[in-house]
Amino acid sequence: MAVAVGIYYHWGVRAAGYDIVWGRDAGGYYDYLGRAFAGGHLYLPLEPSPQLLAQPDPWDPRVDDSLKLFDAALFNRRYYLYHGAGPAVMLFAPYRLLARHDLPENFALFLFCFGGFLFSAGALSALLRLLRAEVRPITQALMLLALGVCQAVPFLLNRVWVYEVAIGGGYFCVAAALFFLVRSFASAKLGWLVAAGLMFGMAVSCRPHLAIVGAVALAAVGFGSRRRGLALGLPLLLVGMGIGAYNYARFGNPLEFGNRYLLGSANQTELRLSRANVAPGLYYMLLSPPEFSPVFPWVRLPAQARDIPRPASYTVEPTVGALWLAPFLPGIVLVFLARRGRVLLWIPIASAALVLLFIAGTGWSTERYEVDFLGLAILGTLGAFAAVAGRGRGQSVLLGVLIVAGAVANLSIAISGPYDEMLQNRPARYVSIARWFSPIAKYRPALNPPVAAHVTAAGGTQLLFRAGRKPFRYELSIEGPAGKRSLVSRYHEATVTQPLDAAADPLEFDFRYVPDTGEMRVASAGRVVLVHRIGALVTAPADIAVNPR
Image (tube, rainbow, N blue to C red; front, top):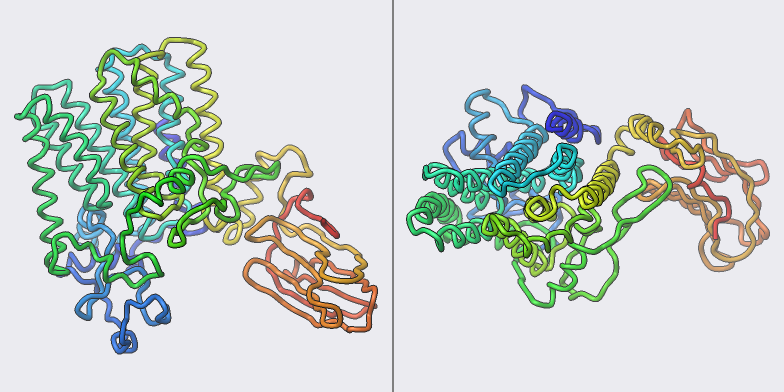
């Protein structure tokens, strides 16, 4: 199972069309930071534009994005990375020093995620031994499947940028820390706790709010033994002091990570923890349902975030709640029935709950944030299940069904990812994969299918035709008030408009898609009135509709 997960992860970071390119300097933010550290300084090796520096307020979100390095921090006329330095310390700077060129960010994310999975699997294995849990081999294999693909990492792999690298680094460090922590409960050697403390600290250097996980572990261990608490806490403290020194050297404040100086959008430059954010945050992070369709890939992010009451400053991207990704999570309540290893079970469970509450309180919800807490919750849930009901046949079957359902949801959502980039960049690959899993022709996406139709339109705004699914759906419509109507052709972010004869009514159109040129051609009375070059068209017959209501 571990090999299969590794193969999938390596494919996943390339599937959307971004190959791993070696032997060159790249333009990734962590590549810049790795170069900075290798060069002996903390600022990024990029000069802010004079036009940006001349602005009265360069940090104003209304400043033209073309003038700035978006999502970087600008301070004292230098660019800095506000995302944690951990990935650069662990991978990018050492690789730069050794190879003299940049480490591809997508390969770095693969290493972090696969390493995190291996450490999570090791932690679960060690936990099962400590619990003396008897679990069927097939159930253990399914548990590894849950750790590998039910925790939103497949989605994270689809689009690799600075955010995903930081999140992947935090996931790796937390998983490694938990592995060392669990091993420490079976050994009198304090080295396991020292290693755990170091990795809890490195998790903070990737994602500052993951300090919550280290704090929970320190409280649990220190309550039982001061000596063991010191072994865990001292390396965590030392890494924390290093992070504070890093912040002070950049911004003159050990607690400033750069958010105040961020060149970003509104609501990004300030952490606004609020109780008013918690309820909508919990909904989006836990409950928000996906969109279901009989057309591959069946389960998708909603086209837009579900509209529920939330503060005006709340920022949300389309999300699918964790209970859909890991539908076995309600089994977490079994921890109350566990007779052994309660401390070890409660550490990931309490950490997941507190990290989730923190994220919900920030007023920011996005699918990739679920990686911060979902792996922890899954580890605790699987451990609790093994401790209470591991040998029960009926319970194991139920767990297996729920794990498989979660795996299907995660892998389906990962195909489309946040922006459906595989469909856009590699349409032939997308259709080929869809063909493997679509036995019914009506629901099988095809590349550049023959599309032609004749429609009659009379009066008012009217949708004449649509094909495909958002965000790459094609639509042809008539819009506008009487006497000023236009023929409107839309595909993704491109729109072509052709004014219509005010006197013509009813209107008749013949349109067809030309695969060789990627054009949608619309004719009226034998004359071509609109040509829209849309490129490749991917649609299943079920997603084609003439005069849809």
